[in-house]
Image: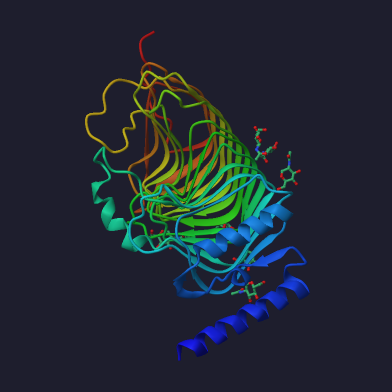
Length: 397
Ligand SMILES: *[C@@H]1O[C@H](CO)[C@@H](O)[C@H](O)[C@H]1NC(C)=O
Ligand SMILES: *[C@@H]1O[C@H](CO)[C@@H](O)[C@H](O)[C@H]1NC(C)=O
Ligand SMILES: *[C@@H]1O[C@H](CO)[C@@H](O)[C@H](O)[C@H]1NC(C)=O
Ligand SMILES: *[C@@H]1O[C@H](CO)[C@@H](O)[C@H](O)[C@H]1NC(C)=O
Ligand SMILES: *[C@@H]1O[C@H](CO)[C@@H](O)[C@H](O)[C@H]1NC(C)=O
Ligand SMILES: *[C@@H]1O[C@H](CO)[C@@H](O)[C@H](O)[C@H]1NC(C)=O
Ligand SMILES: *[C@@H]1O[C@H](CO)[C@@H](O)[C@H](O)[C@H]1NC(C)=O
């Protein structure tokens, strides 16, 4: 019995080595199965994945994952690599169930010219980890693992893949440059804790296009130090909308500048397009932001600037020193599930400058007229204004 199995395994190995010599490997494609991975949803494949990556990285080749469900534990794929690396996922890559001690599940770092693509799925097995999140407001709790983290990855592309039920955030991009994310699907239930879709921080020149994101937290959160990001034709919902922030929690937060959110649909979410900053002494800025052609459907806060954001904790004190300026909302229309469809709640210490509302048409989802609110905001209006402009409360100078 046992020797038969060993014979079979040896035979399979020979088959794969021959296949490898004949074609696959010589073309620079490294099928994880050649390195011993088994897509049966039970075998632990971390080592095989690591070895396939090493080969592909050394030669500037392709890691190929096909057929089946591959169980993989916490893993880091790091460079520098010789040329670009292609990471092809046409299978399910699955995290072990339960909580993990690492901050990430799959990390790519120090790579130039990475392409992650395929019709496959990264399944974080979140439902088995989310119950541990009940402690998330306690200081001692570390966040659950992010499914996919890109750190110091430049000139790279992520396309076609699906991220399903992450334990923590679905994807983070940090300290990176020139990244395109296109045609991806991100899915987690509306009530899953902190499953942000895509979070960015300290990155420059990023495009997120033609993607569908539904999660239990922000669909996209644009964090400190993000510059030149375009988000185009993204469907968001359920979730907490497309947010800039939160900014100003940490003294190391860098400015956010150059954000364009274009032609997006936001449906059944807590927020639509949002800017959130902490009341803190840290002097950073958020500037040159455009939200244009955004369609809201049953969104609780379609347009919101919240400069008194404290991550949901009580006793938010003091005022924010984050300067919000030059923010345009152009052709934002659709329905709000709350009365206040436009809420510009800016800082008393640093009033918002250069806010423009141009052709806004938001009504109540339940029928009827919505209202607007503003505080400490310098706003100019053009075109249609539904709800009508708010009576601006500005601080005494
Ligand atoms: C990515 O670009 C940044 C900024 O140009 C550079 O400092 C960094 O070394 C680059 N990283 C890689 C992996 O090439
Ligand atoms: C996914 O891609 C692979 C490789 O191109 C292909 O063989 C397979 O049919 C595709 N599966 C689906 C569901 O489209
Ligand atoms: C951005 O990266 C792509 C590869 O994904 C490359 O083709 C393009 O030249 C890069 N653009 C810049 C400005 O570096
Ligand atoms: C988007 O990705 C899916 C796989 O998830 C693929 O079947 C489809 O062809 C892609 N669409 C485009 C326009 O590339
Ligand atoms: C974003 O779009 C603007 C045009 O609206 C373009 O000038 C800019 O280069 C784009 N940025 C990126 C990161 O592609
Ligand atoms: C948004 O919804 C409108 C109207 O239903 C539709 O025409 C448009 O294609 C949608 N946009 C995206 C990015 O799916
Ligand atoms: C609008 O939201 C409602 C309720 O949240 C949902 O049932 C409906 O499918 C949504 N419509 C569109 C076009 O997304």
